[in-house]
Image (cartoon, rainbow, N blue to C red):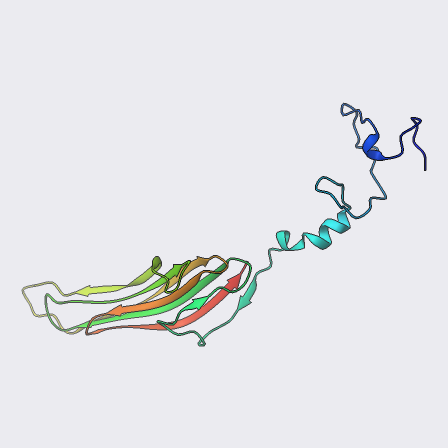
Length: 176
């Protein structure tokens, strides 16, 4: 294959008129790129950069295999979304005494993780009134959600007083 100008043997030596519209002149027969600014075919890009554009998450249905106060690490190469469904219960029969039940999802670059990322729960306080209140119980469901970068650690902790409890209802993780 020759070039229109004598002495030019490589495309890199060809002077390109940048003012010209190249829309009707497709560039074809590209080889495998070897340098930073080499052109690449659509197939080469699709085959080698697919992870950047692949938005299908990897789902880890860990269900009941994860435990409170246990440290986990995102050992993958992608950001992980951790979603923990909790049920917080508070029961009190004493006026003026607060009962709380909370859970925290902690994330950190080091172990143990200490950065509060998400929290949920309930606080129950029976107020003084003219009539004695019957036993009071509240239950709520809540979601703890965190984005955990690759290599980071995470754990769920529970904090409750007498009359309170926190149960993990479900736990699921997604890698993006």
